[in-house]
Length: 93
Image (tube, rainbow, N blue to C red):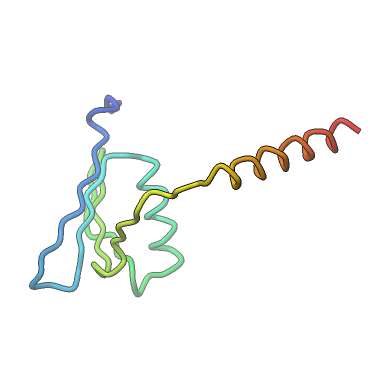
């Protein structure tokens, strides 16, 4: 079954009273990432349900992360630009 981009949702659910978070997804890219985590860390990540278009996982809610946006200074941006120019020149040689 082909889902529209809008229908490929991911929902993370947890509450203050429990230590486990639940993630429901219909996004194949998220499923691949979580399936890898389930295979690599079976004691931490669990596949708890699935059907033909979605999967549900559980894991410790402490693994849910919030991050502030990365601030890149003008100096850092210029250094990165110079590194890319040097890298491209090295490939041409």
